[in-house]
Length: 305
Figure 1 (cartoon, rainbow, N blue to C red):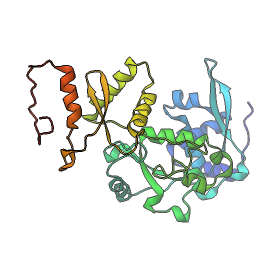
Figure 2: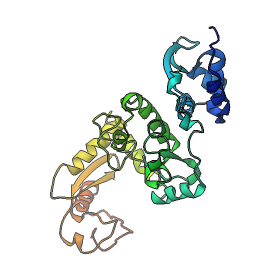
Figure 3: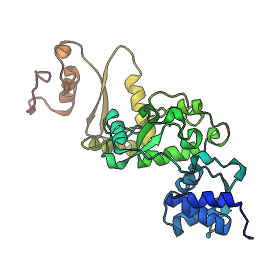
Figure 4: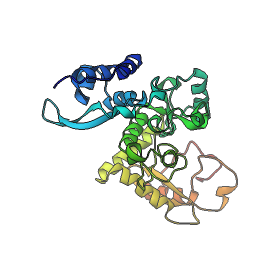
C-alpha cells in the first residue's frame, strides 16, 4: 500500500496527542494505512481494541471501521482515518482529567456500588464514565463537573456499555444527547430504551454469603434443564403472579416451595427472619414421622411452636 501524504496541520495535531493508546493507533495507521483489532491486541497488548480506537475518536480524529481477515482467516475489525475535514480540534486534548475528590463524591453518592450492576467494589476498581458518551457530548459546558452527568462503573459494565454504545445508530448517525439520556446505559435508574431498542434489563449480583443462594438457583436450573436467566424470571413471575398476598421462596433440599403467608400473629412485630407458621407446620408433617424429635435451636418469638 502506497504511503499516503497528510497535511502538515494534521500531522502536527497527531504529534500533539499524548494518550498512549491513541498514539499507538495513530502512529501505526500513519505508517501502514490501517490497524486491525488483532494487531492492537496481539502486537501492542491491549485486550480491548475498541477502547484504543475510541481514544483516537475522543481526541477529535475520525476513524472508519471496516472488515478484514485475520491471519487465521477470521473476519475482524480494522480502523483507518476517516474524513479529515471532520476533525474536531476542540477535543485534541481528549477527556477531562478528574480530580480524586470528584471520583470520591461519585463513589459516596452510590454507596460504593457500580451504577449499572450494583456490585460493591473498592473505589480503585471503579472507573468514571460519562452518562452521555464522550463521542456524542464531548466535555460541553453543561457537562463539566456536574456530578449528575457521570457514573462510576466496574470494568465489566464499562466494557459492555462501550460495545453497546459504539454499535448504536445514535452513536453513528444522529448523535442525539437526549436519546442517550433516555437509554439504560446513560440512565439505568430511569430509562426508556437500550441502544434505541425497546428492552428492559435487570442486573443482579450475588456477593459474599449470597453466593450460596446463587449456587442453589444454578443447581435447580441445571436439574430442571432450564436456562438460569429464564429460571430466575419464572420465580419472579410466580412470586408476583398473585395479588393481595405476600409470598416466600424457601429452599428445602432440592425442592422449591412457594408459600402463602399466614396473617394471624405473624405481623405482631417486625423481624427479618420470620417464617409463616402454617407452612412450617406442613414441612414438619411432610418430612418427619409422628413421635420424632424436631430440634429448633432458634425459637424466635414462637412462630414455629
